[in-house]
Image (cartoon, rainbow, N blue to C red; front, side, top):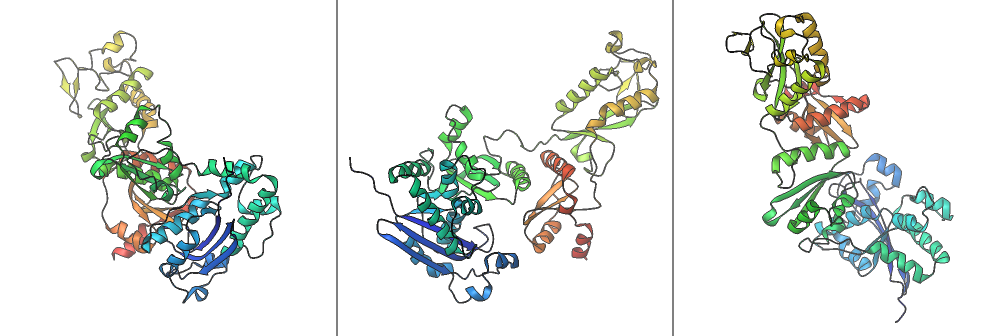
Length: 482
């Protein structure tokens, strides 16, 4: 059997205006081809057709004047394609560079795919004892020579140096086995385009699986989209995973700034698109809450109020948000048993026929003991043995952990997450914005209905959020509407 020769590698690095390949653009690209035909260097400055942020200019040294007149990516696309054709695409955190180039090629009218080798993963595989594998660590550990850091050709040359260093320690045959292992594509459903997997970034976001006719099949979220999507096709023993693999025909994904954005977007999209395999996070049409109402004889009684009767985030005397009446009654029954409450007073037990009505509309005879009292599991509120003052205090204490928190801000707020701002008002998620005009659009667009899952996500996040990441939009809204 003939010995396998080392294929030609294309060491690639790009500089960009930002981190999102759909929104930002490439400003510089460098390719170093290295293989049996020798070594060849190619690089170009590229006009992004948009502003280069000040902090990016300071990091890369690339200014608007430098790229002016250099031509947009489409002008260089054919040359870039020729430089990469038939070679293994090698980059550090390769999904970033590959995702940008693939998206840019698509906008220019070219279909580009390649075998992708990530030097981060290669370093982890070859040097598992190292704690870190970023480029600065590789420079230090392998004594790589660096001149002008954060310029495309310099960083591409660092990858070439790293490869040459490992060539000194491993034979070509050993390196090829490691490369082949890293290039192995995961098994994917036969009806799904495998090339789509090359485009999925290792970024936070939401993914959508579709069945025939683009019918939503499943929606999920992850801090690492690519890893999470691939995991669905690796567990062949799971019935749900197998069912999804058999039905999936297409997929989409939406990148978010971080995990909070992914959580909020997932909850919203599941309710909007109703994917068939999502059970949780579906919209409940029976949302309700307990409200404590004082009866004629001074005892508090929980009264169930539905969503249409509630001003969510404003009313103070509400306890719990429940997806159904059954769920709400289950919570009240638990409290009654745990704290020896009268089930007649709580409305959990039907009163005797001869009775007088209280303010809530339910009825009981105060002299008639409840069933729990006869079993010594009630402290006697039904027969007056437990006075209203004590009963009411105990009931509020027992229900305190279910108390629905009112909106703690004077109006809408923005929650900063990386470059995005999530706009929220009275526990309602209005959307995410990248700039002031988008914030204004969200504030003026109208308020969505209250959502239990969004409430839980926001309550948890705001409980530990850094105050510096909270923007008060109440006065800002007044300014935009005036």
